[in-house]
Image 1 (tube, helix red, strand yellow):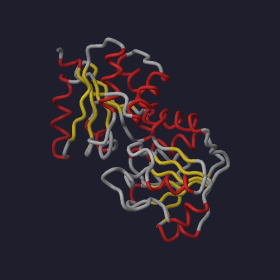
Image 2 (cartoon, one colour):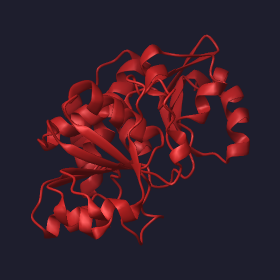
Image 3 (cartoon, one colour):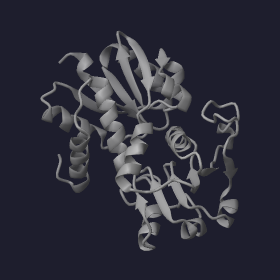
Image 4 (cartoon, rainbow, N blue to C red):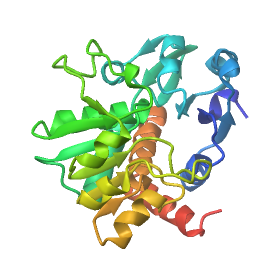
Length: 279
């Protein structure tokens, strides 16, 4: 097989990812001679992989913790990904690595699929990594009348000079104690808290969850994190990251191969993976 037929995902960890199952099922359904691999990279090996990928991969997705750090290692980054400040898709063009962002459109698919309304809302987001940046950009682009606050372990990541904050005003950064005292309409978890290897705590104080009207967790494996289980028990609207995963994968596939696999087809395959009916 031609090495340029290889595609994949890089991150650390990646064992939870459903991307290989999705992409390889798409390749089979479209009779495409490609293979998709998940590559668990230690930070020290990122540069080595990128060097090899120039001639060995057609392209690859990027997940935590490399959506930000990978940008400095690429030959170019497209305008949207540069503004957002995060890359989750790298395409190899004649040995040059070009970064793009499909998480932005993926979050749009999540909102459309879930029916959750963001207009005129007070929103609190947990986490300030690459996924946060796409979510923040989408909300501020499409719901300018909403207010956003952030809970972060690394508040230094939010600089007023960051191009993500077009007005020059970064969102208010809260600690957990302060978040307990405030009322938010929507809580969005963009952190790994609640993932299979990060179970045991909630991304938001129980008091904030009790007062919120809806919750979104970008984690899709498991589909119902302890955070979303709180909303389920209270009978409140909530959404996992499953449809965001679907939306970003669809757009990544379309950009990488110039082939439209059909968003409905991607959704159906992911539903099958979630239900255990797709090998």
